[in-house]
Image (cartoon, rainbow, N blue to C red; front, top):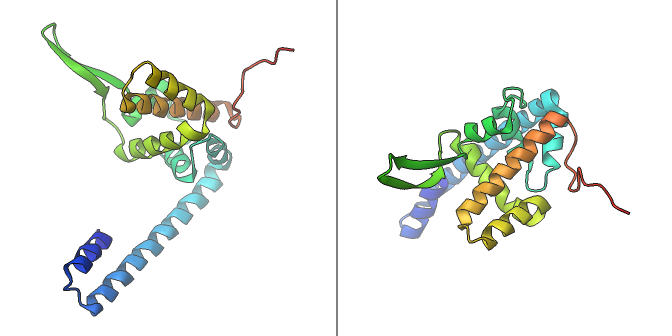
Length: 184
């Protein structure tokens, strides 16, 4: 917010150098606080759920921030028995809006859940489309069928959640060809 204010004031041409310096120091202070909190969170995760944290990052598309959010919000995946519960918890489950037989609405995600995690997973899905073979195949298949970009992206988000859940419950790091038998 302060960065936006500084940017706006700089473009007005009426910014006093003293105010500019004060705002830049304030921004630097916030950046330091953010780095300190991120370090504390990482240390806590490594102490409590180090293996899970590392295993989640083995999934192409999931980085440290996404792995930490998934681990923290699910209590190390201990609070969930099935991946469908997790999809619903994050608010990315499909929902059809209709009333009886006369009102047909469009389907969309329910959005009842954690918006910050949903946004982070959406960004992870963008990366997963490039680096995660299974997510890329899913995305391409849905787009080839004529599905909208957002529909395909939410399907990739759900795929990432399923992969994360499987890794958390099995304790095995991500393997791209897991479960495929080699025919010779």
